[in-house]
Image 1 (cartoon, rainbow, N blue to C red):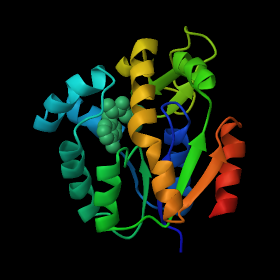
Image 2 (image 1 turned 180 degrees about the vertical axis):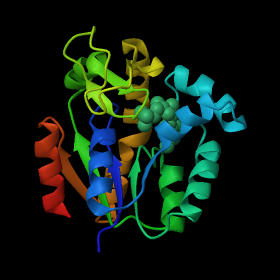
Image 3 (image 1 turned 120 degrees about the horizontal axis):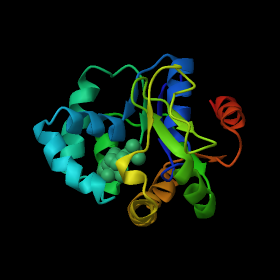
Length: 205
Ligand code: AMP
């Protein structure tokens, strides 16, 4: 059964949206390391204090910090998971393989120009956590829960995005080859609408 899945892809490729839908579809918990880190920052924990500066600079949070957080999460979530934004480096991928190998790795492919366009439109709901593409910058109420306020992420400024994209190319993109060599990689055209991407993914399961 395919119930240990990870989603790879550049920032704003739609990982978070697909991860939420897929986790619900498969009835497995979803781990979004970016979301966990933003919570740690909000609650001013030790991890949050370390992570904040890295995230605001668009840099990756050190592998040791990420693994501490993920290992803790995995203890209670062994029977299945959907991983969004983890692993992002080869040491993280190797550490995950030592815990539990994924059944399938889904790689969302979207060209850089499209990602830059999306990042300027992207907002996150401060209440339900949904990621939303706004048509106008004046849209402030979440269409998913109809009450939460839509806010821009602090690391979604274009300059910060460019650094994140460079990190992705250098440190995360090599994981495509890593998982391809292990026979786990399935590529998905992430330029399609969210529904089309979701349909393509469900056919691969
Ligand atoms: P995301 O919400 O997945 O885009 O993550 C937001 C930010 O959190 C990233 O730009 C990184 O700074 C940090 N982050 C999230 N997951 C990881 C990870 N697995 N390894 C290193 N840094 C991460």
